[in-house]
Image 1 (cartoon, helix red, strand yellow):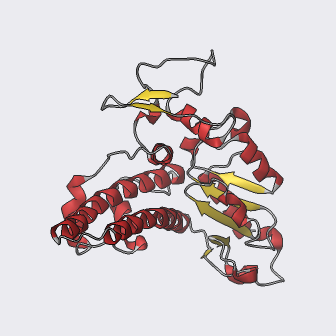
Image 2: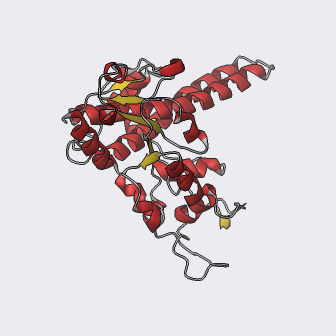
Image 3: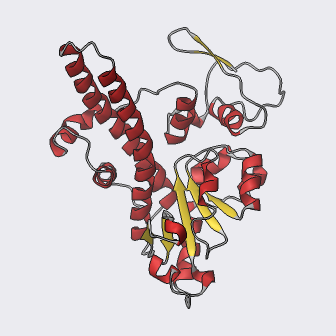
Amino acid sequence: MIARRTDGDLLAIVAEKDTTIERQLMWLFGFSDLTHPGFSVKSELETEQDRIGFAARVILEQIGIEPEEEAPNYLDDMLARFDGRFPKTVEFSAYARSTIRDLSSRDDPDAALVAWMEREEILFRTLEKHLFGEKLRSLVQSGIEDTEPFIKLAQSTLQRRKSRAGSALENHLEQVFTDHCVTYTRSGVTENNHKPDFIFPGIRHYHNAAFPQARLTMLASKSTCKDRWRQILNEAARIPDKYLLTLEPSISENQTDEMKAERVQLVLPKSLHPTYTAAQQAWLMDVASFIRQVKQRQNA
């Protein structure tokens, strides 16, 4: 794939056939519906993914492009509210939700989850850019010649991004479950000190041998999967069928076939289902359906 960037530079991408990244790039740039595969030219992008949402941003960052999307109108409020620092992830997630007052997960949990994640991502990058800039200017003005402080600053910034995305997804899922009166335990301890993201109806029920196994549910949440989905397989021995919620679009059929073989059910917000093949979509579960299933088990 060869694309011309806005600054005139050319971006050349080579992806292995039938891999997740190939499918993601095809979806992102609107080539997923090619009637004549081989060579095709698009002079304009006219698909719904033109708007840089969370899923598109994940793909772009994998190929070295950092979307410039900020919310400057909220910067002063965030600096005052959080005292010019990064707040705890739970606090920041709650703030992100508060900026979208007309959206409730009670009406549409799939849409709410995506909107909350996208808003938090934009707000976080806005705050990050400001705080990172301040620290960088401070280092430059200090006249330090040693590169180590600059390297540590960059490393801490990247690490914060990675850890925050996963925490944000769990935070917003907690709100969804609370809105729908679903009982759960977050990060409860199971065998060998494993800590699944969510156990339903709770970790107390999980450790109660008399509680029916069929009424237990385990959900892992990963903003992106890659090969890390296999980590969840041994997190709850009493629950053979696992659920995995992700925001990653266009996972390859090879990967989803492996998930099926390992008894892992993939859960995605409804808006991401069209990024998958028709065969995959028939198997995928959306957030609303997952909630209904958990509540049925909870109320059985």
